[in-house]
Length: 180
Ligand SMILES: [Cu+2]
Image 1: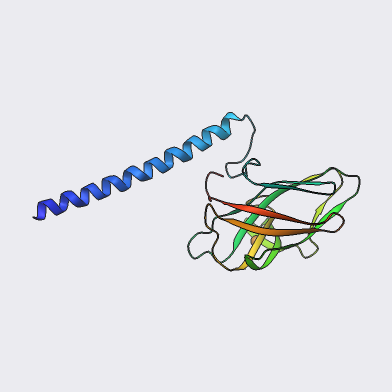
Image 2: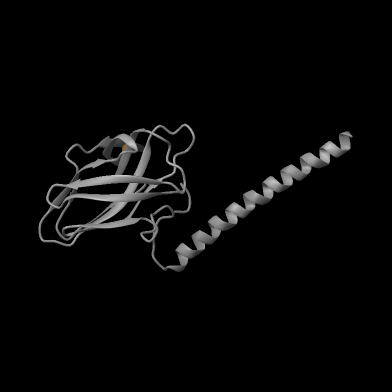
């Protein structure tokens, strides 16, 4: 009897290990594919093909996504790339989402070896001809008072408002924390 139970437990552990290694194999494959593209990108850089894209006047928005939230994580992070193909400077002044009480624009900065985050009350400048990236460990959208934690496979609608280009709606996919 006792022996049978031990076998059952061993089988359970074995299948758990198996599914874990399947997950890491998939992650490895994703990394290999990133490397094959020949572009030098940090491991957690967004893949523009996976994110949402939109146009607002002279602005091209691409690679827009939010990260799945970990259990107990109080806030969500959102990222995108904005290219200003026009001749005048613009500014991303605000972000709104029905999925969060408020969305702030933040930046991360190293100060005395400590990563600090602060709100950019004046928004994110998008100079003429420039490409501005909101990415993990840099500029980002911070979703506060999130109504339901962002889950992989889900979506989060947002409205971006620019000083000159006006407002644009995007549906952001929720991508896994690793391997996106
Ligand atoms: Cu933040």
